[in-house]
Amino acid sequence: MPSRKAVDVCILSSLLAFAFASSAAAQVTATAVPMSLSALKPESITVTLTSSNTVTFNLVGGSADTGSIIPAWTTNWNLKHSENTVMVCVFLSGALSGTNGNTDTVPMAYILGGPGGVAPFTAITGNGCGQIGNALVISTTALTNANRKNGSKSDSVALEINDAPLVLQADTYSGTLNIVAQATP
Image 1 (cartoon, one colour):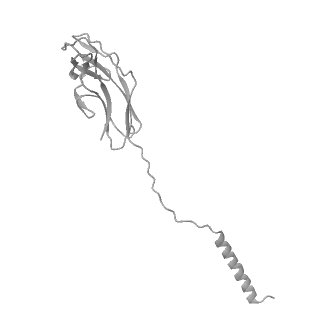
Image 2 (image 1 turned 60 degrees about the vertical axis):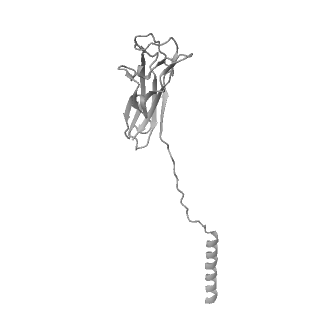
């Protein structure tokens, strides 16, 4: 029969072998290091024409002459919760100027717009969308949780030139009408 000491040595040897085998096969894991993630979805608001970008007028004199087309566009937006309204305006870059050395102009006060493509026509000489004295507000949309992201609205404006009081030289007159959308808190 083996001595007690021999049995104790065998047991101790077995335990030590198991302990060394366990520590040699154990995984070593570093402490987790946190890293912040940030994803930014920027606000956006765009205007896209859905009609031709050229309006022509036949100035026959003594009347209000309507434009050849009714400009139409779509405004799309994706806005922060702090924005409450989307305003869409048209504004003039200036009077319509004659070409070929002609100094006559069609003043802005005689260029009129009908929001929604219908009368009544109003001079494009108001304020809106950051413009002062040369704008016409076409529409205002209140924002809600339902329409704040991926919102969309279609608009149009009929145009006319009141050339009744004007005495213009025969010529081509040109200028620029701009369409802009603005989100406000």
